[in-house]
Length: 142
Image 1 (cartoon, helix red, strand yellow):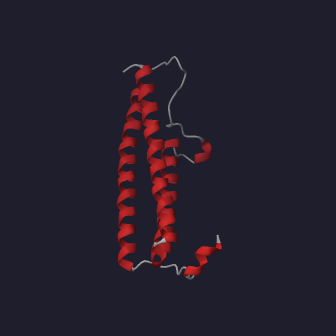
Image 2 (cartoon, one colour; image 1 turned 90 degrees about the vertical axis):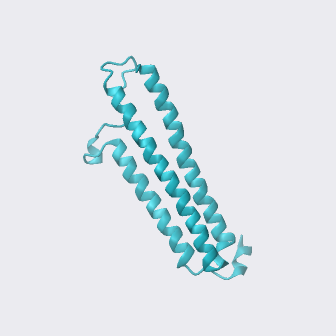
Image 3 (cartoon, helix red, strand yellow; image 1 turned 30 degrees about the horizontal axis):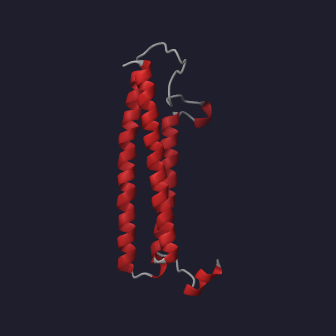
């Protein structure tokens, strides 16, 4: 595989990763809007259904991200086999800066993304099932 082919694949994979993150945040934003406008007063069955759909959607995005991660690591491996490159790029994310305490950029981004989505997911679960929303007349406040 040539340097140009690997760079082309990396650019395509990066676009896919950005798309997955964008769709995930879109799903979360739509859920928050639905929670505020409709689900906060909905019966438990409807809230369970909506949260289950959100769970499946985010699970699908997580599985897709895991597959993309394998492809990204594969392109990193192919890049490392090239030896010298015309671009002078040594790698795409396998560096281990001191400020990450031994983690590579790949590993740190995986940990950060996982923690962020776990915190958002738990917050949405709390808002869906535990939090007691103010009375309906609160909607007219904005």
